[in-house]
Amino acid sequence: MENTLPVLPTISTTFIVLSAIMVAIGWYLIKKRKIEAHKKAMFFAALFAIIFFIIYASRTIFIGNTSFGGPDDMKIYYTIFLIFHITLATIGAVLGIITLITGWKNNLVKHRKLGPVTSIIWFFTAITGVLVFLLLYVLYPGGETTSVIKAILGF
Image (cartoon, rainbow, N blue to C red; front, side):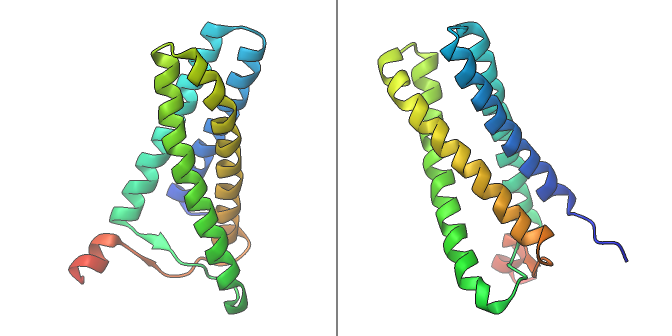
């Protein structure tokens, strides 16, 4: 039997990678003083991040999260890495929203200070997210998947 990648995690991971690529393009464009193109790139970066989040949250609620299926002696390292990724993602999302709002409101002093920090955190979030995906679905067989609804309601 051929091992295939799970559809929703593969799609959501693709969107977070696309988001990071658009942030990199946006960063390049603003360095070139192409402000309107920068705004469009960052809009798509945000859109791709939102699409990622909708897919991820929907999957988490309705299907569930997949536990680490690798060797038992690696689980603690995976868990620590996952907590690091989730912390980065949360900080990156909050900073991303603030950075987008400061840009949208033309508060360029704050936007110029936050933008580079937010971008770097977002790149690390995307990279660690891809590593989580690889650890869960490519390098090791995925563990058990339980939905939040099933866990809460006991189905």
